[in-house]
Image 1 (cartoon, one colour):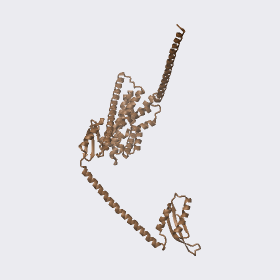
Image 2: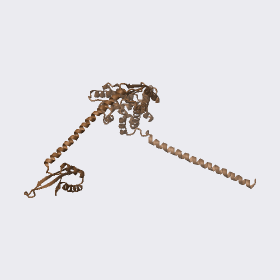
Image 3: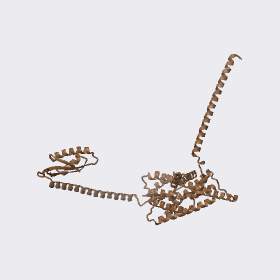
Image 4: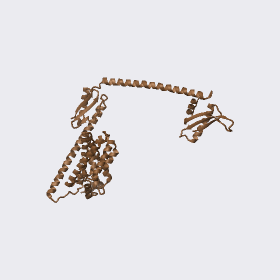
Length: 498
């Protein structure tokens, strides 16, 4: 092999070695990036774990003792419940949000509901039985108290506070669930957060639905009663469900029984009860969610296709949408043509959730175009009559102003000297020249310095606006004095300030 071939071969080896070195450098950089990314993800994971993990700050024994202590319902607790029901009923009757909030804060209803969720989570059938009995007793006493108040109280009407508790939607479900989560998390923390408990009591609003249900019973309004009890049931189920889930996540110790057969039986009963509670909770959530979708689609249909149509006179009512019967019942003032009915039907079918609904049009045919024209003519006639009355009154006002002016001139002519300046003209000119004047008057006054000789002097009484400074008042009074001398043709004018 020649020297030249050896040299060429060594150059190829060098190039290969450089490529290998570059690949190694790239791999090292990638490995460094992977390590940095892994370290970053580990740091983020650690941060989130420290931020969101509340298991280490949980006092299991104290939580169970505190929840069990709030379950019994007797003595002072019963009277507190009665008082809170009366306060809430008065607040609903007076349409006062502040009073209703006060009733929520003092209500003891939350105790048995937490007891139900806890007993299902820890397999405590005795606590479950006590919680259900106490909750049922509280509900009956609350309904009875609210019923008596609204039945005996003479002033009662359907206020907005009452109406707001008769038709729950998806937001009420979410409020109850997340409020229950916040409540039980606060309960399990070492050193219970009282402000959270108060906030949940306000947010979930257990008292107002029961009072509204009592109002429905007192007035025989079963729609109010059913809607309010439905809202209360939603709040109760989802608060208990949130309690059950949190305690299971925190792995609260299950209650153990000496008898293994009894332990299995109790466990099955608790599991079955939990499933029974969760099934209506899920069903309620899905039902309310679907109703909310129907309501949203219906509102969009009405806004886009009815309210924006100038040819339709829509009379909206609370029962226009019936999700249970799948009916849309629309009421209109005036006649609705067949073409318009067909157009509304086609527009309704464009909304996927409303396609299965039956559209019923209720047109008030008595309000035809002729009737509306007659009503418009009557309105114009009434306006013309009112215009005539206004014109007559305006003429009377003008005549009265002329008479008052003439009377003023007559009075001035009798009480002033010949060739004297008219006071009306003088006062009007003074106000024009000196805009800050609030009062003006002048008169001839007799005075005697030696009690023998008598002189006649001119005196002007004035009052200036309070906002005018004293230095400005002095300048204005000197100018007024000079002007009065020229107008009254006198040598001296005294300015007297009121």
